Image (cartoon, rainbow, N blue to C red; front, side, top):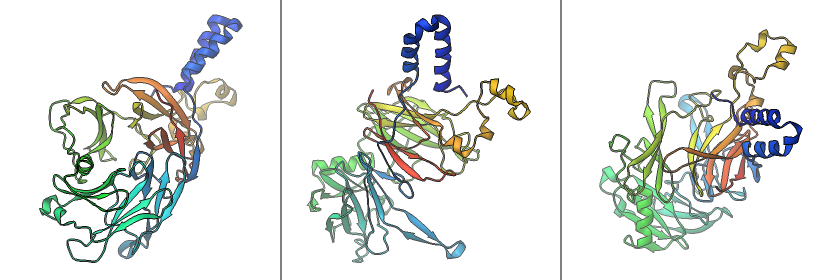
Length: 401
């Protein structure tokens, strides 16, 4: 593991001081300023319990917390209120859904203006058992509209293609069957929209990945990408020219799989580059959520998230005297790093060339943050962790590059 940017900046400072002496102070300042990326401060912070981004849009996210009751055979689950957050401001609203609080379907995408669409059971017939559609306003938590008796019969058959995905943009709401038909509603009032409407077809194709070319890996083999939840490959995001995906490849480690990030040309579907050696959290539990290297898409392009973990010493600290310990230039070993020190580990964001995958420049750092998602210019991260619990969540304005 290489020394982080703090260590590199210190080496630059020592080298410049040796060459220039006191007369080189301005040069030292210029060089160290270039060596250290800007450290971002949180624009907003909210309580993080049950607020992790799950169902996302360009500016908002929504999540439905589930409470566990009991253990073993007596375990039951109770749905909480839907939490909706504006990533630009941190404003959060909550809305409990009718009935038992569980929707039939939650949206794959939230519209840019914050329309969160869910389908609910109506109890009317077998085919249309979930034919009530509700559009929630993320800004207020209140319904913008509710539409009953939506005709879902075009989505019912054939059985093997019955899986339906749901999403919204500022024009339409689409319920789309994988490789099949779509039922669309108007985003402003919930009224019906013809299935051959251009906006309806465009959103349905985006939700089902029908708008993408056939994807291939570096060896020219097909890369299945479906929206039915059965594919090992999921979409991370898109630039104007590049599709970024992540594939889970089974292995025999404790994690059970490794993550492979792959960038595809949006025109041809060919793989431009891939990364299969992502750095894992050296302090994390392999079976639980933890910090690891990952990629995301921002307005300026593709970026990489990493964590500037400390570098272990070459000698055992327990065998050193206090004076020797003070003179050595090292940090604690990974096994000795405490929870408090983990919470100050800098999260580093590096701009990446979309077509080659090569690092371009370090864009920013955030101390003690755990990456949770990117919403336009806002990086959302878990912060102020205590005992590795998700105590708060914060938004940071990411510089453009």
